[in-house]
Image 1 (cartoon, rainbow, N blue to C red):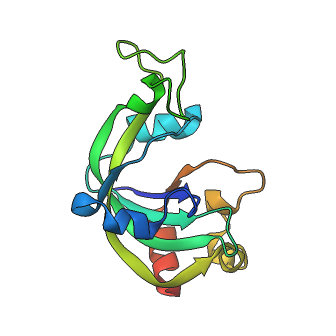
Image 2: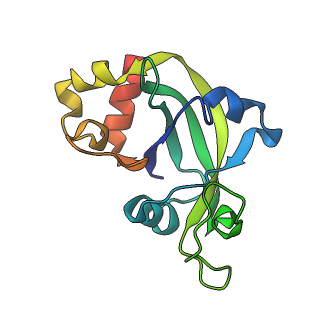
Image 3: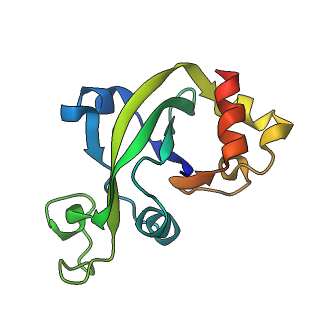
Length: 152
């Protein structure tokens, strides 16, 4: 099993939105970064654990846990001309973008804020706090996962 962190703006899609979905499951669509796409397409497997991270909000941070409930498949929003994630270069017979389904596991007891994560020397190698990192999907080591959960 692997561990991941996935960012979402709560004004667009929050941990509460995921919790309310049928089967508490939702496609993680709209990723338009090749590195993030490659991780979802090539590395994410059923059952992998995900930190759900709220970004671009008053207190950015880890707010919950989800899991991969369906491995990568073509992101159909790229084919829909009326969708904000439309990409005319992505075709159903030659998809450029992929998504996974994520399923709600639980909310954290509290938000573990980005500022707190940055202050922890134990998390020095965490991609989230690396200067200039803007990826919406990133790996988390098992050691980092366990340490972050200990902060809860």
